Image 1: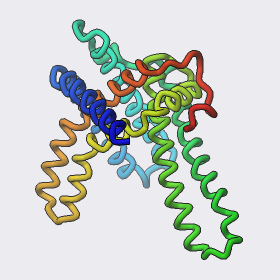
Image 2: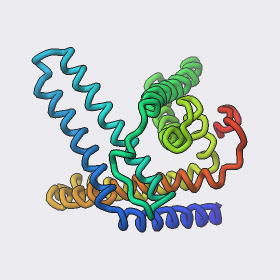
Image 3: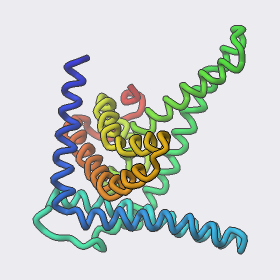
Image 4: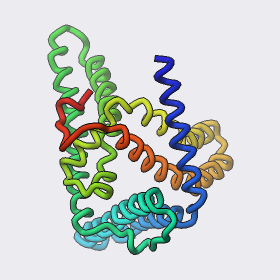
Length: 262
């Protein structure tokens, strides 16, 4: 177990090291896309607040518009990072990294599958806890345990299937196939991904701790640093992690779900 953790730590360090080099050389272009995503996300919230009492249909239309814009920028960022990893010598414009209509549709359908899987996992955990009602254990205890286990199950499932956008952009996979491939490549790599997320999310945790310690000014500057450095670095690091897992994946054809759950 100790050797496995050492190997996992080394892999994470290698991924972050490479991500830092790529981010440093192309910081402004990557940060620009991240900033556009940030602006789109906040503009959506502001617009929803301003027109919430004007017209419900207009609100829904604007929410859909900003959601599509955000997803398009997100996929463009992935496509741009793939270009940097595969052919960094030749420049590419942001416009040329825009995803195709088919890729956007596949991403939207995959998001629907993603949410259904998350809800399904939670429902299975709750249903599995139902027979314990007849054991005499207090209902409150059963509910708390079921909810806790459900949250853990959702978190694990989220990590396992969250790489589906990479397959849509990099391999042009269909929505359900992208979910299955994400499940397949993360099999046996959960600890490495978790360590990577813990390292990348360290600034967010630090920010929450500073707020809890009633140090809002320091928390503000940490948040600014995180937004301008960690967010671009995280995007590159996760893309590199995807490429690393794909290089280790030896499956042939479209994977099945049953043999890749555990």
